[in-house]
Image 1 (cartoon, rainbow, N blue to C red):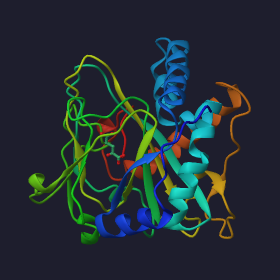
Image 2: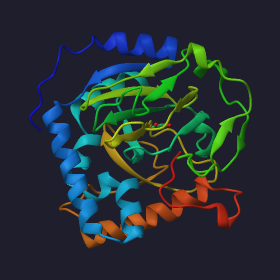
Image 3: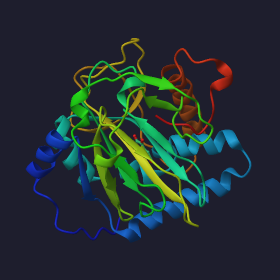
Length: 289
Ligand SMILES: O=C(O)CCC(=O)C(=O)O
């Protein structure tokens, strides 16, 4: 990647802000040119999927298993360095999927916390949301409530609103102080970091271009699924001394048959976790969270 980095923040600034607010941004990861090249790779792969909706859904949910450019992104030294300040040097990627808002789309994300529905036994987790396009107020950037991560798990209700990008259209079942939220605007090539208990949401895309970001869920290897399932993860830094997950290899090429097969297996396992207790007819492709 042809990276042109702006002056990076001192590592302690990341950990301090994250501890206080539950998030950190903006983190310089790649140049805009490198982000545009990743976007072009994704869009070429989307075109190659044609009208195969199942493949499109797998591609958008598991790009780092199918495209070497995204396998490199989740291992990018700037991301690993920043994430290690928060969860330590041993790092796995639990998932890395797109949140896509097409031009002019009503797609939104309701106020929620991430960790409530992932079936993990702790909170040694951090999401790096990497912007493939700029994230602006107009195109529906994320909004974070500073300090809300200290509330730990709060109750949610499943609403299944059609334009909600979350798996269950889940929403925090209490009033959220929207006025205190911060707009997480990013240029293409920057990322934000957020805690799995942070209250966050995002609005529709009122512009005439797509808004795309990859939400990379980094976890410490000490975490495990409360169900006992060994989910598929990417081992991206340090060591895994726990063996709670099955490690996947990085793709050796673009859109290879064995990687489609592994992504399919991953999707089946994740569906069981993310949709636990939900009626089959409510389960939709291209949903997150
Ligand atoms: O992309 C968005 O607008 C929302 C992303 C989100 O909720 C997340 O990454 O946890």
